[in-house]
Length: 63
Image (cartoon, rainbow, N blue to C red; front, top):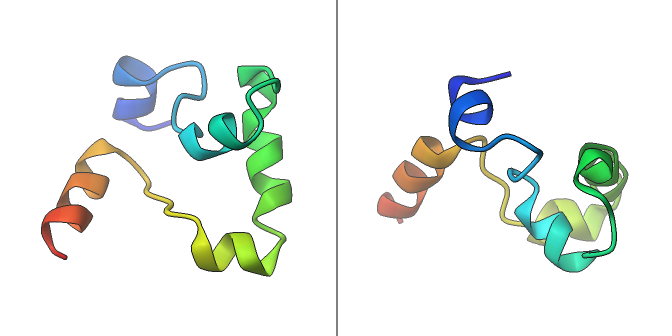
């Protein structure tokens, strides 16, 4: 678990896309849902996945 996950974004909030695609899934099942969705080629190709707030910010600034 990263610093960001522990102190800034607990309770699987890093799975924001999965939460919006399937809002009825409890937060504690979002990591499993993410793994299942990542098995789908279209999801892998189209989903915007970052590994944290800082890396996501740097990725967006680099565009």
